[in-house]
Image (cartoon, rainbow, N blue to C red; front, side, top):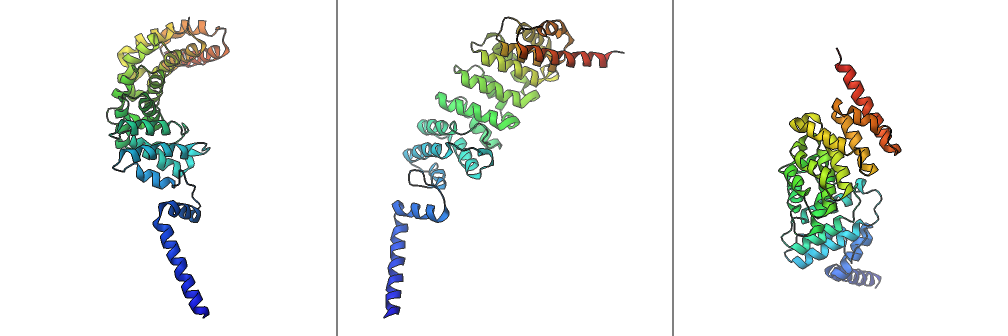
Length: 297
């Protein structure tokens, strides 16, 4: 009798579990409980990552939005494998054929911390550089920030060309992160110098002008080449009549470029009323004067 009870009880439990696993409404909560995995809109993260490849655009849109909720509040994203997987999936989705999927993916991506690592392989960079030309501003913003996060890898394919074009974007967020991305590329971003000079002199957003000044210094004198004299003059002009942040970055870049023609302007900037500008000018003077001493016979 007891054996029958155990048998039928076990059979009933097996049937119950089979039915529960057959129904999504109960399958994922059970798997989440067993795997100690949180659910988002009733599904684990891996489900939504896979759903980004569904044939149905509506399913991909829902997945992209739910993956934004996964990223909210992560404090150590750079060390979180789950975060890496989600960010990689969202980066790929920025190249989706559906414009609303791309927008949803971009919105979710921008919810992740700037420290979150992005894929740096050529295919991912091509997704991002292509997204710089998207009609939707959220997609362009996500692409520009992601390329900055990618660091020097952003130069892959036609990255420098696309980022240079993005310096002319109508959105100041895109222009600012295009500057930041080119700064991380450094000397290999030499083709962007003419456009960076236009940004430094003419951009309506002072933060973009400031970042253009910083980027020119990081590209360096050797890469700037024949435009060095023009660059030094533009940075020297930025030492007066501009916001303190721009004056500070201009002084720093003049030190990095190492052209002694900047010495008189930097000596004057060393007396600037702003302490940070004075400090940057003093440091630039040390660099230039030490370089001049080394070259002296």
